[in-house]
Every structure is written in C-alpha cells, then in structure tokens.
Image 1 (spheres, helix red, strand yellow):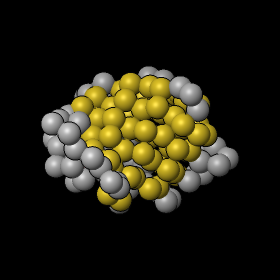
Image 2 (cartoon, one colour):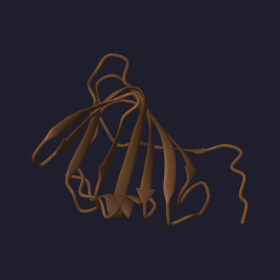
Image 3 (cartoon, rainbow, N blue to C red):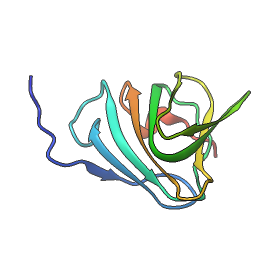
Image 4 (cartoon, rainbow, N blue to C red):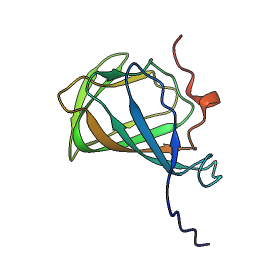
Length: 120
C-alpha cells in the first residue's frame, strides 16, 4: 500500500495557550487507528492538563525545549532529543521556555480524545 499525504489536518489542541497540531497520519487525516504522526508547534508558556493515555507516545523535539512531567520526575527535552512515555503512565507536557517548541509526536495506537484521559 502507498498513501501520499499532501497536507496535514489541523487539530484543536488542549492547553493554556496556542498550540498547532498538524496530523499527517492518524484517525483524522488518514483514517488510521494503528498510529498517529503529528507535528506540534506550541508557543512559549503553553501547558496542557495532565493525562493518562491508553497509547505509547514517542516524542522527538525539532526546535526548542518541552517539559515532560511524570508522577516521579520532570524532563526538559531539547532539540535533537526524544522521549517515550508508555501507555497508562500519567504525563503532563508544557513549553514554558523562551520560543516554545516544535516536535513530532507518534502515538501507538493512534491518538484519540477518548483514549487520552485528561485531568479535569
């Protein structure tokens, strides 16, 4: 199978400030429930609610720094680094640093609002 993705779908993001989610593969843009691949662009000061997702999330930072908080640790993931958060692990993402961040997120299975389980 070959599938050319000519452009991503823009998906509304949760959080305190603007964040652009460009989904290339996933439930919205390619009707794929096995994997989602999206480019994220979040502004300085963005923070989303904590979550306990039913998927593994692989993140590769392209520009800037993202802060990843778990129940036990906090990580500052800089450009050129990646982090894996396993399914059913509580996590909170933010970009509190100057310039925000741009990163790729890959979710297995594909991201779904019903599977993310955000804190209230």
